[in-house]
Image 1 (cartoon, one colour):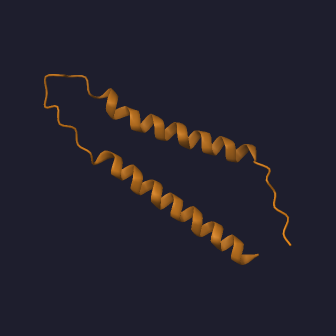
Image 2 (spheres, rainbow, N blue to C red):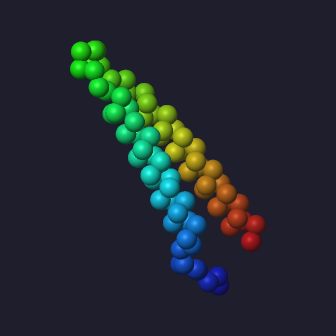
Length: 73
């Protein structure tokens, strides 16, 4: 029977916090760019889809690595 270690490392907390901060900063940049009210008010919706695809790819890579680590033990 394997012992499960629930201790969270400092590196993991820093990495997660930094990732969340970067994502929030990048998603708020388009809102700052909307300063001229005299232009066309239509806003493209394709910007967020790229972030969702990148997050999905990153999550998939993480899951594949975890699966390989479990199977190699």
